[in-house]
Length: 605
Image (tube, rainbow, N blue to C red; front, side, top):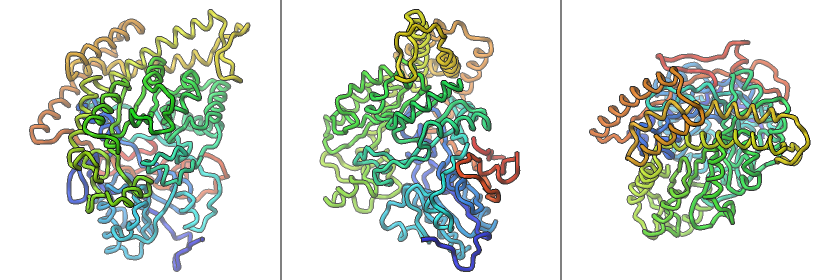
C-alpha cells in the first residue's frame, strides 16, 4: 500500500533519521552503563583488557542506507546528544525515524514523547531490532513501525517504487578509533554490506528471525562487490573493507568472482568478514588468503555439537590454520545454554579459551523477541517478569529462569570468562600481531616454494596446480605487499603491550612477537621507534586514568562517539544501479557535513 499523508505534498516532505541520544555507557534513568557503550569491541569482545582494548565506535549503517535510497530529502543524525536532537527538530521535519535496540528503549521513549509534546504534526517512525517487541507501541509512542531491512518499506511509505535497485553508499564504517589512548586512523577502511540475514536459523539469533531465515542480498554478484570496492578506492582512497554480512562465504561463487576480478585488475583489496566454520571449510583457507581476508569472525557457540554449522569440523585445527596463514580469528561462544550447569559452563569457558583464537566473545544466552528461543520461553513461562529492557545486552543478569543458575550470578561468571581469556592469552592486539607476522612469513616462504616447484594458481579451479608456465604470480606479490603493510601497522603497539602486559607469561609472549618481527622484517626504523615511544607515553596516561577511575568504582574509561550530521538532498535523478554517495547530491564536489561544538562530523569516516 502506498501512503501519502493528507495535507503534505511529496515535495514538502523532509525526513530526519536519528539514533538515540547520548551519553552512552553511562548509567542514568534511561540506560545502563555495563554493556551499553557504543563500542562493539570494548563492550563484548576485548572486555576486561583495560588499556589494551581497541576502542572503536561504528556508525549506524542502516540510517545511511535508507537516506541513500529514498527520494525524500533526509538528514542523518548519528550519536546526537540531547541538545543536538532538540535543535535539529527545529529545522522543520515532517517525519522522524528513530533506530534503536531494546536496551535503549527508554531513550527512544523520551525522544518520541518530546516530539509529541512539541511537534505534534511530525510523524514518528520506529526502526531497528527493537521492532520485534510485540507491545512496542505501548512503550514508545509512534505512528509507524518500519520492519525488515527498511529500504523497501520506506520507499513504499513515501510513495516511491520499492523494487528499484539498492544503491550502496560509499562510506567509512568507523566514527572513532583509539588504541592505547592514541586516536588511530579511521580513513583507511570502508564498509560493505553484501546482504542481510542468515539462512542458518540458529534458535537464538535475532538477525535470522528478523529476516525470517532468509538472506537478502544487496550485492548479488562478485562484480557488484568489486564495483563498490573500486568506487571506495576512488572516492575515499580505501583498500581495506569491513564486510558486514552474517555469513559472507555462504555464497562461495560470489567470493570467487570477486577474486577473479581483483586478479584481473590487479587490486589486492583486504577484507574482514563474518563466516561460519562450515562455509570456511567449503571454500578453503588458501582461497581466503588469496582473496585478502585478514580477519574472520566465527561463531563456535559451544563445546557440545548442537549446531549444524559446526558438525564434524575440528574447530581448533581450523582456527590454527587460519592464524598460521595470517588470518586473525574472533571466535564467539554462548554462556548459560540449557545444558550448562556449574561444571559444564566452566568446561565450555576453558574449551573456548583453549581454541586459542586471537579474540573471543562471550555472550549470555538471551531470548530476544521474535526468536524461536523467546517463543519457547514464553510457552514454558520461564521469562523473568519485569526484567528491565536496559539489561538485555547479554553481559549482565539473565532474563530467564535457568535451571542451574540464579539470574544475578551470570554477571560475574561472564566477567570472569573475559578476564580468564585475557590473563591466559594476553592482549588481543598481541595475538593479532602474532597471527599477522606468522602468516606473512609463511606466505612469503610458500610463494617462493611454489615458484621453485612450478605451482601456479589456477583461476578456474581456484587452487594451486602444477604448471609449465614461467609467468610470475604478480597478484600474489601484490597480496604479499598488502600483508606486509598490515603487519607493520601492529609493530608500534608491541612495546606498550609488553610493558603493560597483565602477567609474566603474556609479557614474554609480547617479547616473543617482537623478536619475530625483527627476524622477519629486520630492525625498526627511527620513525617506528619514535611512534612506539609516544605510544608508551600515551598508554601510561591511559593506565593512570584507568587506575584512578577504578578507585571510584569505574571499571572502564568511557569514551563518547562524535556527533555526525549529514544531509541528503535528493534533487538529482540517479540512473538505476549507479553507485552514488547521497551527500554528494547536495553540492557537486562538496559533502554536506556540519561540525558541532568542536566535535567532528565527518562524512563517511
